Length: 334
Image (cartoon, rainbow, N blue to C red; front, side):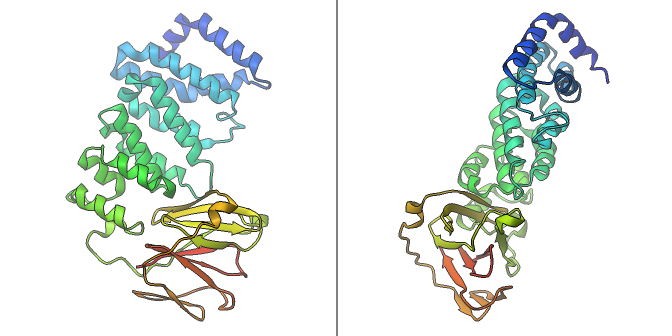
């Protein structure tokens, strides 16, 4: 497939420099594929350069040079092409980046680099919804008026796509966006005030903006983890201890930090010392009645035997564990 006329002209004018950079990458990287690079220039870089040439013509060459450098890195690290470790990176270049042409033109290295890294990260864990992030950002990116707004929007949508550990930083980033854009990003109604939505999101990790002022349904919970032999993370049934923002998790001799909210749950490495930290919570203790978890809004039947059930809770979430399960069940406390 031939590239656009605009990119073809730039490639011809800069041929010697581009060829030298590719040759250098091939020398430094065993197995570097010139065919993969050429294919990605056609399928990914060309669309970005053509979009910039159409909207900000004077920036097309600078964008092409920056994009070529990043393409060399992505090819060297096998992040694009038929053997790519990430399919989302290539899709972001083909589907998202041309829609960001004006912002790419302003800061090509920053925008292309940051959003490529975001796509790679969101494609790195099964509980992160990279496809959702790509669709949402593609729909809203044209409303970002500056590069910082575009990157903040990407962070907010990454949080919404399951990256629960980004909650605090994403809320801070969200407050820097225009109100119509941030309301759309979090799924709130256009007429909702961001001040009220922000306050609710900050106060309750399990509240969803689409509920508005209505009462949420009785929670069905969120299941986190599974046996490592079946592709999960836990070698032994996990035990948990609460902290203010989430839970410390112990499985055998491995320790993790679990953060969760209505949009997702994430596990990160932690230490034995962190797991042993004391924590007390003023929230009323949830109760167990056999295999039934008793919460303020009603009881939830657990799909677990009553024997050995354990619970831990903080101000907003209760975690349930069982010696017969490799998963942690999470429920909103209120």
